[in-house]
Image (cartoon, rainbow, N blue to C red; front, side, top):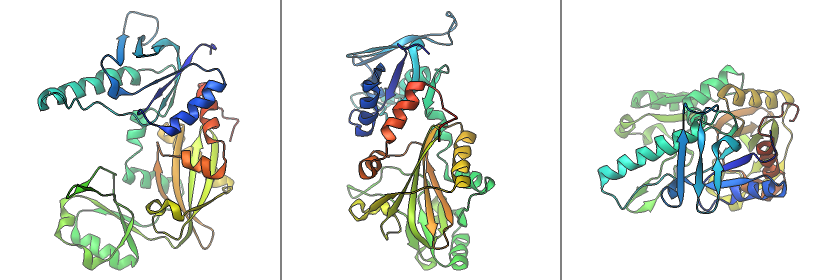
Length: 323
């Protein structure tokens, strides 16, 4: 790896978490080019050639201030990019243009194979299906709460009656409004008699409630593992950040190795795991967010998470000696 190879940071315009990592990269003297697909046009250009050079892909992407030669990319930090909507175009034209950006600009970046991805967006997408996460967690020996995915009303009611305390969680977060008011789907306890025929419209996730004493958020960066205990007394701690207290904890060695192996199986180098700790000291699997937020945890705990990302991106490879 030559010193002039750069890091590409792909994210939205206002991303404080990405700023934290870029600050550390700047201190290391690592060249950084930051871009957002929504800026396509005069503010973002792409030129890529295939089949006529020694490298898999050659060319460049350019912003209003910087240019990145694709052959020089040592690592790509794929954070929270925004894709253009082309609201100024008619619907058909907007859909066409948006597809060309995703498959042209996005596809060009996805073709970069001689660099480290944190994480590759196609890997993130494949890892983001909760049923597949649950099955993999079970195969790897993690404790998975009894879970049902169904749009069968009778099955859902029977599952709730069998397990007593059951929660409902969305299978995928999506923007949602009712009467112009934005709503978020939290994990909520549900009773059999609350369910009606609308369950049949789409699959729902029902899960036996863990008798937890606290939540654990685990961030993996390469082979470094950061575990934070989040105390709240809430079923879903995301509902009220002002009610949270944080403390750094150490995970059992076997659990830590399993989480690392979980990401390796998915081809990811980073991810945020949510676990629940019960009264007997057992850890229960909840979910993986392959591209989860973590900036506020560094602020609350002082853990050097941003520096760990910067180290990983600077190396351009995973350090298997680190943990």
